[in-house]
Image (cartoon, rainbow, N blue to C red; front, side, top):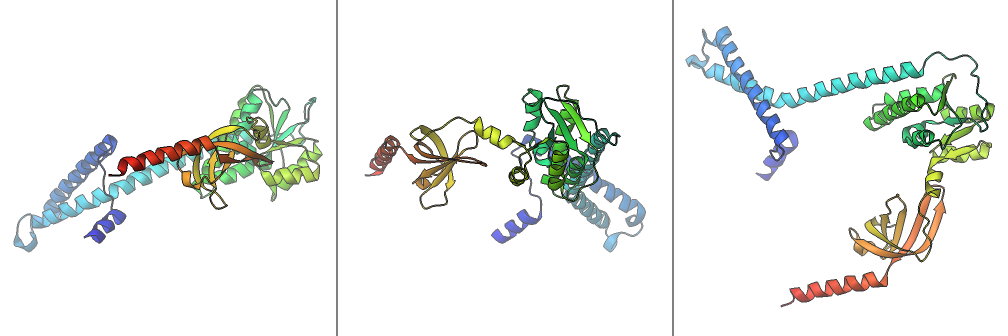
Length: 332
């Protein structure tokens, strides 16, 4: 019996009526299926069974056709709705993308004249556009340089938005929208730099930065390293975010919820609200709980801060006392 129930759950849609919206959907679905069944009953009778009743018994054939029609409509409606919704989503996505690209790909002169700025122009790569934080830095005047986006970066965003992967498609669409917002921002001097199609976007981006004596803005860790080796100035938004984080030093007491096991035995891992990783010695037993820790060491890397800590004695004492009280209460 259990295997039969599992088979039905895995292969057929089993409705849940906890959600009022779902209940309304099921009612509509049943009504449509009933109407389809009635329609099948009437049509089959008029066309065939009125003259040739199945097994010489009235209404048996019509009833069978009606039940089959009902079942088909009931189980095909979700697939039809899903297909229609997907079709509408694709049409909207394609229309939006074409509109953005048409605006971004307007004709540009063969040689782009860069305005004279006191600072070097900033070239945006794909990662920082999709990340989105650069938009706010420009909007709040933290970056007042000329903003340059090479044509091959726009084309790469378009390729990502056409990806078969939904995650990549959403990232590409997000990048195109952010690019359009940067362009419309009156505080930014935004230009699309005309270029040929690129087979290696990162390499061509660095070459272009050298050519126009500009900086590269990126969140890509590897591109950041290659740019430094190549002598190209880099604006790393992740590094900026790390520098602006709350300054924590050894000896500070912090509270953190331990979420998972660490790499070494007994360690627990948690995160501060800004995403900083906290490694807690002997924190494994407290996974899912919030603990008080004392900072032992702060490790600064290009990827961010990593804080090593241990649980405070006072917290351990309180926790031990609480556990002892619970055990005593359970004892007869």
